Length: 160
Image (tube, rainbow, N blue to C red; front, side, top):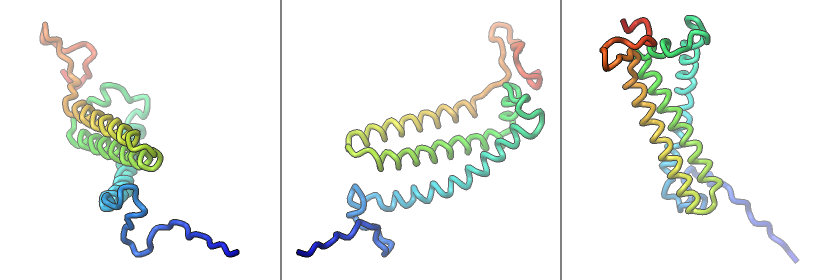
């Protein structure tokens, strides 16, 4: 009696995507390759964005004790920091959403569960990106009392 061992499934060595190794028959091979590449490139940019963000907030000036409403208002008064924080927000959200999308595709066996988890992820990501972008660009630190037209007493010093 002879027994033959089946060869384990392994990725093809030719570099081409074999449809039997993907859940959807290989139709998303190019998208998955671009998503993989995005994770690597965005990760490099995020490291730079995060370390400059942390250095400018924690090491320059008064350090962590100086972080307050006025600090953020003064920082976002300059367009460079608005776009810096915008790039940080967008890249971090898209990077994280792509990672969670990969986890959902790997571990959700049921197609309906995978669909709904993906929809929740996409809606939450879009909502946070839209709301965060609105906050960054519509932030008004100089609070004015509409009845009197005078600055609110809690407004930062640079609003005078």
